[in-house]
Length: 497
Image (cartoon, rainbow, N blue to C red; front, side, top):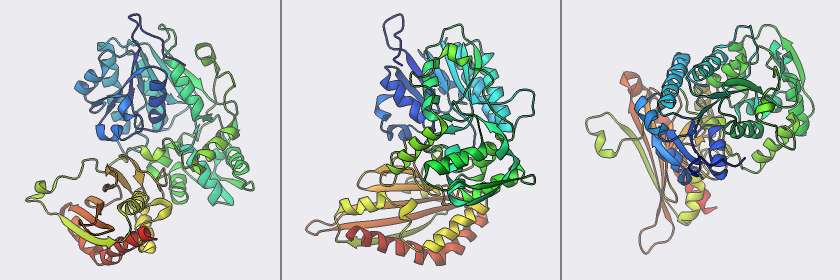
């Protein structure tokens, strides 16, 4: 869908809120390709510039709940895509979502924006909704009352490579040959392929200016969750799973169970499961009069699964649920060394030489984590990941989106990439549960002049929080000799191999 020029002949300008998230990260480059001038609002500009399309968009640095930043981002904007959801946030997320929505709505009205497009949640009428579904309904109502023409697209389970819903189905089916499940496995739901969500989002920017309403969107199949799992099994070449619906699994218990057998952490699994407690199917197809479906039709569920599996196999997952920030995790960058003066800081520094070239050493560094592991004490790493999951953290199960490339903002197990200097530095910020702030630097440098090979330098940095942080560092210190020394030795050995 090509962008329609404005009356002055200029291409329309689109503002994307949530451009580094799962949907926003796919929509933004498609808007660019369609001829829009795209602006994004992001808390960390470096995270956007590190994306493949980062140099093709205008970046305003700031938060969506900062009225000044939103006002600056709204200038000369035709359409706003609001794709921000507090899926993994803790207590108070409803207030946060509403505050952000009001700030965005007021900014859009003040800037005379022509349209707001909001991706909400498919939900039944006249029932008690889960907090997350209720929040999405309330946010949509804020925009519909804003005075700015708004189209709220209400979608259910989104199926695509890297989506949290797809990863839940995928891992539950692959791990469990027999599945005891909550009663919601018998509820009817209407999944939608991510490509069709993007189709509707692109079309929403072109609807008539008088349209101000919410519409349901969904794929062509109405299925029970158990049928979705067995549909996945057929596409993945697995035998179909026996599923038993149990009345005793509450959403809380079910989310803990999902958190143990899938990489989706409990804070994200819980709202997904809670949204499945009710039947969520499209109430009518009035959206077709506003945005006609693709000429080839909407994507059937099993076709969506097949496409997603193909992306995973080709190591070409465009965006992932992992890209979402973890509620409560630190987000500030590592201070520069001089700023440490007067603060308690613990470090562990290791160095090693290798006969391998800097290019080969960097390839090993860039591919660390996920399937490749951490090159030392796998039992200790697994134990640390398990302890983190028990404590409500993300654990090691998130893996990594791509096997051999990294960019700022990517997830690597329970770390997030904070800084990348290709060929030289990979800096990881800890998102595991620790009483303090932690970083890990992996550095590749050429050997001194006149010598061959490369130098590897590894530095763990920990800023403790109170007595608990100091005791934590002392408690793990004996294991650092096994873990960090082994990492340095085996990473350089892997480069040579």
